[in-house]
Length: 415
Image 1 (cartoon, rainbow, N blue to C red):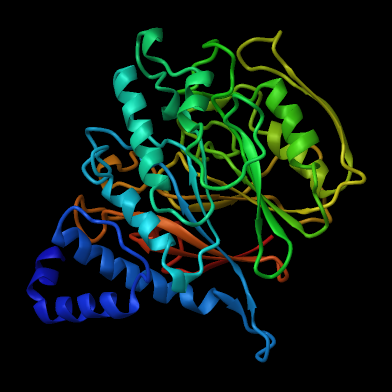
Image 2 (cartoon, rainbow, N blue to C red; image 1 turned 120 degrees about the vertical axis):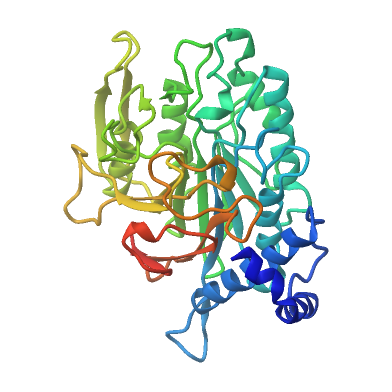
């Protein structure tokens, strides 16, 4: 495919001219080579064309309502081994920020749901994290929100001296944001409210699955939410300054599904220390305006359970979905098996974004053709969220996985 494209010099020239006169209205990033720039322009145009029909709710033709537009990247895996996201010039990451900042697309926010790096030694992991944050925020003029994944703690190494602690991860994130965050001091979890063009706010709640005071649990293979984070999530993030005009999106990394070695869920590599139901059952109580009192047992250590006792009977705001990654595939699934599931509500939805760089392809789930350094090297998701119709319109930039059972985008979800 790349060979054919290179022969089409006339098309190249036309695309270059289209990019100059109708493309990004601000200074574009310097991409690594002409080929990368050429492939970016093709993917950019195709993604913008996919997105265009869903930018507005045109039910009232005289007064169309703008939807909330969101770019979702995940599993960027910046390292010195990555071809497309090498820490010296993480091209695919730069492309995603470039795409999101085109004025005519009117993107409202951007998120990155973990595995920002693939670490080596500790000094290298910190170098990669710095590269990720630098390029994620460089010239990024829209609100941008990251959360940590299992690779980001660098706990896949045999020596504890190479791990990144909770404090080191929080410090790496310090002063890197481009938007006001409600963030407990020294923590990597937070929330932020972004104006919805249709009225009200989208509240992004970013969770931290590496949240432990020391290295008791291997967060390369386990997600852990401290009691402190759990209480903050329920009593602060889901309540503080929340109004009836708020819509909530929760950012995390692991899919909220039980571990299954046979790949019958998207969590085939890793587990939740306090089960995958801890956060979703809190959300279900929030959605149904009810109370929850429950103890979530620890699968590793019985003395470290999580006790929840929260009342949402007077709460306001609506839950939209979870956004995550980890499985290196685009996927949508219902969160199932909740003991407090409400029959009056649609199931909770979680949307996974595929890995960004082709050189870090998924082992089990990612069957889509990805070409390192080519037209299919990059992939991420783009959403138009209609908080009045309660629908999510999903399109993509770059390659996608047709084995999901859907021949093409858009994917339209009710919530």
